[in-house]
Length: 285
Image (cartoon, rainbow, N blue to C red; front, side, top):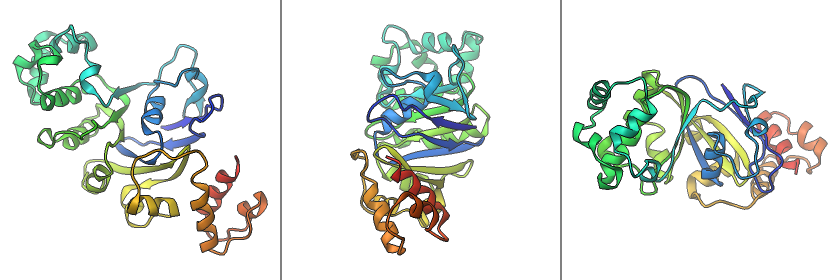
């Protein structure tokens, strides 16, 4: 599945880009950009004034008039994603109407969710248990993609969230997972450790996709200067539009690129094909 964002109608929005997502992919979103806006937009929760039929394309095809992207979004504050007046069991049955109460209890037990938690409202459930319940709810129906915002302080390690998510891919609950980490360490520590899926990283700077590829390649031998700088010193604070140009310019100078004009940047970067493509993109302002 090729997922594209092509909305040019909103000022200061992410520039058009495409991500190729194969079955079993676990994609980390990284870099100094508005990752929450990016993730929510890709999942179909679009900025005000945007039109999903024009902004999102799947395999190059715009969504039909009443069509929605077959996806699920787990927001950063998972407690607020549950209706406060419903118990966890009632909410779970709402989103899986073909499942009986008994089947739901068995399904929950198989995922480590205690039966008594199904009869409690979210406000009375400890954070650790609520995080695990949120991940479990994502397994109740199949989807093409699951988009996840990591909680601000990270997932509780006791619930083994990345093992849980890998199993979702391995069991065919979803085709791919797009994960927005809260802290850089989540990428550095987990991207190499996932073994049941193909792990990839997409690096954004401000409003542009800079580099994307297999996690091991990105972490061990990044191509773009910005990626190298971000891995060594960067954080998740968004940068202003156009910020990546300085990194692109330094990259050119390091490789004795000709002076920047549309023709030279596109044609004269010689052997570095990836750089040639990125140069062209950054110059089209």
